[in-house]
Length: 327
Image 1 (cartoon, rainbow, N blue to C red):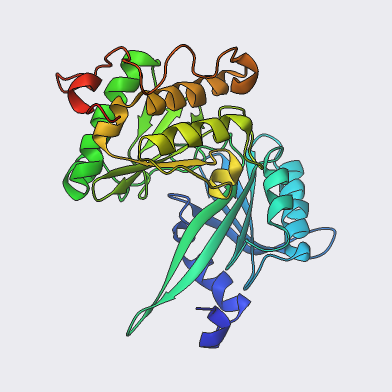
Image 2 (cartoon, helix red, strand yellow; image 1 turned 180 degrees about the vertical axis):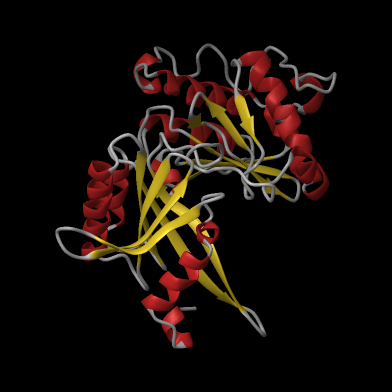
């Protein structure tokens, strides 16, 4: 529901966030100043900090508009000039960022340290809960680790994931075992509340979102596309559909950086089409040519109807033990 329907205004929302900036979902963020007066006129809604990182935060009700979208950059630039030795991030908070200016915000986030947060109101029987979600961010800002998202004691631990999401935890163990054996080293963050972040360098390569019987992965497109479905995506969609899987194109996730969404169970890790997609999405982060341009034969000498090399799944079995002949 909308906050205006509760007779709440933008000043109330600003006060509510200033009282505890951790409500933004950016970690252990502390208030520096509310209504920070600017020498050239106007005032920044909230200036907050986490160590040497300063967040210039503009807040609004409803849909993101052009005025707030420009003002947050104005205040961010002024604070960066005021304290040049610090790291500064522009943060735009609204109830919705899915309208007219979404594409522009995503484009700006590719070149500037911008975070856009949707703060949605959900009404239960006797209360309303405000839930923050980062919907646009610069890829270099790793919200799953310090410093851009300072971790707190309330964040998840590996034990939390194991107990609360046993199927997703089992999938994650098999997934990491295969990745490390076949692709290379990765780093893993468990602190984010909604997913396990599997990273290659500072880039979140394959966030693991829990399902009842496995997990959903959001992967980079093997051709490096963020906006439109690529030839590589078309190819892998056809191959995955043949083995009973249903990938989708979701450019709204992570500012379009990981648009390929795929729901998997642990046995699916043994399917050659899945393994080739994982390898292709992993390799595109090296900065090389798009996958489609590197394939003299898109099947790379194999097909799901052929007998692939068995791949270790981390539990003493191989992909041949886990996958029936129809795969």
